[in-house]
Length: 265
Figure (spheres, rainbow, N blue to C red):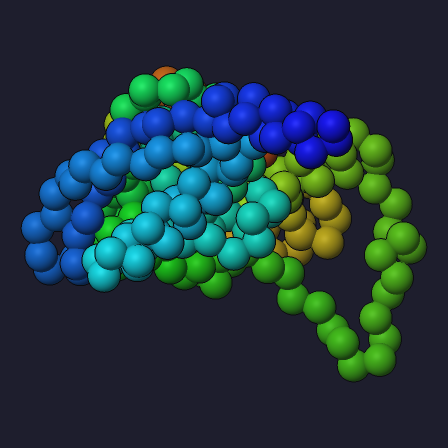
């Protein structure tokens, strides 16, 4: 009796599984032309994450002796920023305030066709298939996204410096940026200003960051321009697609910081 119930339950769950058509960008490296390749995938559970579905596809490709699809991932918890995919034309897919690894297949329905591409930007060259090189963000961070601290044994406890709650909360909100690049992929000019402004703001709002504020914003903006990112379009697509909800107010703050630093310079 129990066995019949379990079999019936399994059949019900299986009947809810989806058959999908995936149109995936395949590109051997940055020097070769890429193309969209069609794949059929069946019995996709709505409870799978999007990356689980890609794992399932790659397992099938491996079993057939074909080369699996290269895609970037690490934590699969929405905090590392690695799983940057353009899904049906939207960074991280159709849902909001989540990364690709947090997107579940219940968002789609049986028979759907899903386009999967890498983030498109001059500053994000394709490494292979869906993997792009986002080291340009690292170089921007290296240019000024830090504070200098004396660690000679006279370090001061962070709580010894009073910070009003509003500034602390706003700085923390800016610091939640995971550097995934969705803002760049969403922008028609491939601008990185939301990313850079978040990194500038998280320090500009705190007393620890004021000491190097002038050099920081000038150096980070200069590096951003050198990496080939475009100008801000003020359309706000970056804020909408950002999985952490980084606010456009940070861009306004960075512009104020930049103007002030330019006058001092």
